[in-house]
Picture 1 (cartoon, rainbow, N blue to C red):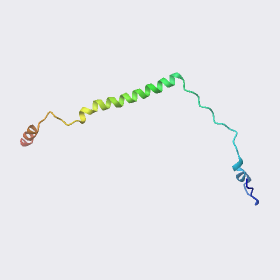
Picture 2 (picture 1 turned 90 degrees about the vertical axis):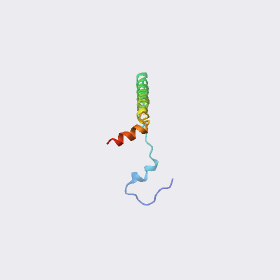
Picture 3 (picture 1 turned 120 degrees about the vertical axis):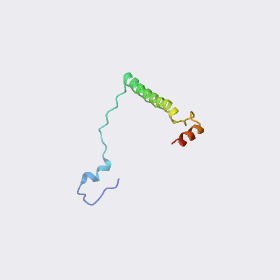
Picture 4 (picture 1 turned 120 degrees about the horizontal axis):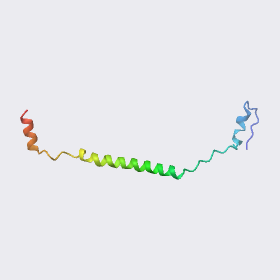
Length: 79
């Protein structure tokens, strides 16, 4: 590695490229069976809620077929 010949005010910065940490991050704990079941139950509940709202909301998004154009024109004439 290239060494600097001029003095460096902060010598630890010049040596920082060689530094290796001996600190290892903590290992993640494996989830228990209860945690896995709870997460999957939460996922199923969210998906069921989205599907239910779609099923219940689709009739409201469809155009109303019960009134014919003749009934609508008579209603506007009577105003």
